[in-house]
Length: 265
Image (cartoon, helix red, strand yellow):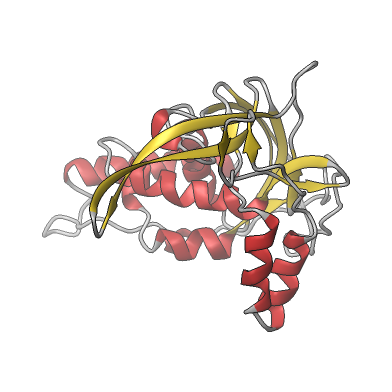
């Protein structure tokens, strides 16, 4: 398990829609989806859509719990998937060897707590980022104005990343490093949401323990020794004599296996 502190080097923009729109989505859901979405609906604030008194738009915003803005753990998992796909297309990245990556991220990696509060720098406040976008419509290209709540540079997130297979750790480290180039939140293509990170490794004995939405503990779970699972690593073709992996892919596998062995010690 990794205790990770993320520090944003560019503004982080909110992604949630206004409360009235979200209420319509919740009204169409049933069962477990309804329970989760209703929980999120309760964290959406009433936000004045008049941006700087000049334009009337519906900004994307941050959820709030007890007045504290934050993001949801599934947004971090979504970032991992985006980072894995990008690293998988890049030269010399071990993510090239992770097949069915979305399934493995969903089933082998967990992020706690469910609601991750923003820790803004001293004197920092939420702002509003207004920008034009070009969209393609049935009538042709159009320009629109969009707005998002923004957290200032220097904002931090503290979270726990639990992995139930040791071989996943080097992938997670690669994805977190990718956040220095493409981050989390709205307008990522412009560089918003980029971050650096620090981490420490902990042990955890209860990897599947449910975490309450209000659990802001710095270490929500105690010791866990993740189970080694080598089956998630795609094995490269070997030469005709059954020897070691060959070619560039073989070199990547050897690098990955070495990193996994180091993480297991």
